[in-house]
Image (cartoon, rainbow, N blue to C red):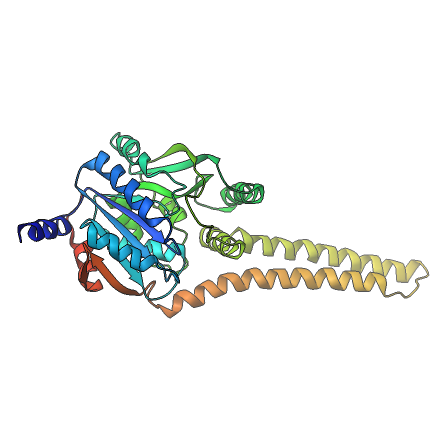
Length: 340
């Protein structure tokens, strides 16, 4: 009985660090993730930590593995979402439910080394609110993935009104007051690393070499990467809308020039009727119109989704130390923690 009381005390006291890990089809990596992450947390803060594992609607035995880990380790909080919401929403769910003074975000594939927690904690002790991992090397990734990621971050830095650090993912350590700002941001199409950058406060890069994936294959398909890129650009920049306007002005000027040319040809030269130039002009102008409508539609779609005010995520189950807990109670505990 004393052991059970001690375990319960571990879950009710606000920890110094919450490690938040979104998981999708990560059955093979979770045991090693737990081993390395518990060691890293123990080295950094002793027993004052929790590990929040979010199952994002996996089809394998990810949830069963999380449940076993939670049953064996009272510091493991298992969160099962009602369906697959996507990586950024699963991460948002973990951020809503965690209770730590500091929040350590990493993926379950172990490409971002958990052992960097202690040096990142030391960096934060210098007075920073966010210590974000900045990749120097990306082991185990194809040339296409590296090239496309490099191009994306540079494009985003040029388009965004908010300075978003290059070559960074969600791997970072941040303070509770930064998290409180994130939790007050209600948008449903989320780009968390951009939202953290937008929040401001004192932020610093932590360069590191990214490892190869521990097991299995990446769950981030090209389609998902393109979707995340679209959310990032439309969520943090109105440059595409301005570009649509600029294109409109440019082609309006071209159209005026063509009108002048046509009138001059009709007045001063013998003209031959032909369809080639007409078809070219028609196709160019039609393509630009469709491009402009597509850009406007992308932003209008975001407004439509936000206007519905649906929940950002739906929690099915929460396990704390192997014990079932009502999701609402866990949310109240997280919101009610008095943290610095």
